[in-house]
Amino acid sequence: MIIAYLKENNSDISPIVPSNVTKLLKFLDEVWIESGIGDGSYFRDSDYESVTIKSRKDILSGADIIVQISPDITDQEYNSVKDSAIIIGQYAPFNDAKIGEGLQAKNLNVFSLDMIPRTSLAQSMDVLSSMASIAGYQSILSALQYMPRYMPMMITAAGSIKPSKVLVIGAGVAGLQAIATARRLGAMVEAFDTRAAVKEEVQSLGAKFVEVEGATDDKDAGGYAVEQTEEYKMRQAQLIQEKAIASDIVVTTAQLRGRPAPKLITKETVEAMKSGSVIVDLAASTGGNCAICEDNKVVDHNGVKIIGDSNLANRMPQDASTLYGNNIHNFLKHIVRDGTIDMNSEDEILSKSIISKKS
Image (tube, rainbow, N blue to C red; front, side, top):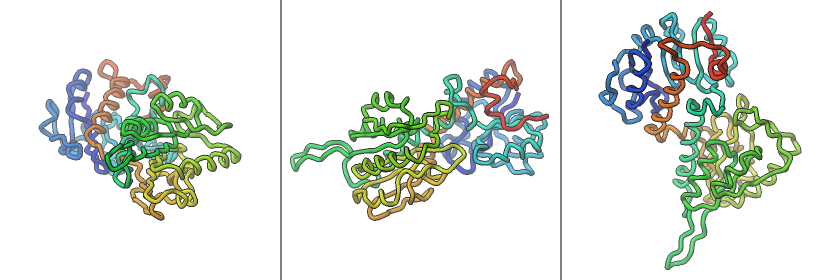
């Protein structure tokens, strides 16, 4: 069985790193890669031992399993894919419900990694969590590039500097990593989340948990926030504004899967914040948690910098590639059994992640 990896055109992250190859060859016959696949993550073609370098055309027509990150295979290229092949990528069907229908019409076997359930069994395959962890770490480092103050308390001969205050909104994977990073750098950190279950995790990292009573907590939401009542939103907005105004850095991570991100930081709140404060909005690609956020831009509003970036993982492409490649390897170990691909529809990981199945 041949597995092949396509070079990513929209990111520096690679779906395979050299250390993956030996492990893949334990249960697969051949590994093919497209030339230059690791250029953006600082891996040379020569670093990939025991692989065959193939053209994109040869990969599409000859591989049994084709792995990509973003789905940039064209309609014409889909027609050249080997009849029994399986394609693996991130298709985000929660943003486009018709994408699965289109692939089904092409009679293809396609798995979307962003649909893997966020369960204990599937943790090692969860690409979203891996990338979110890096984004949370990078959110604090990005904020420091613009903040005109120290992060930790500093005691000098010229006087003492108070530690910076950081507010993290959303204590999922990205939020927890942001908390941990800010605490390591000496900041005073507060965190808000509608899910009471994360309170202990926040506190274990040395942050204060900010709680608004009466939240709807959906344990089946796969780690995502859920829609709240209007009464709750009013109390939430009031508390967030109070905390944001007192903060030097605010990191927002709240996403509603398949829907626009909730607006948690209003224009009025931004205008009430201290000049020199920084907001890092990790939900920028779905509209942002900050009302005046713009995706892939840094907006300066009355001296407050708003960083809109949903792809901070791309700033650490080598480690991001290592985690991504390991996630895919673990997924492949799960679906390849005795040299064949297991299409067991009763398996939760497979049934949730398959978005098109060959008839």
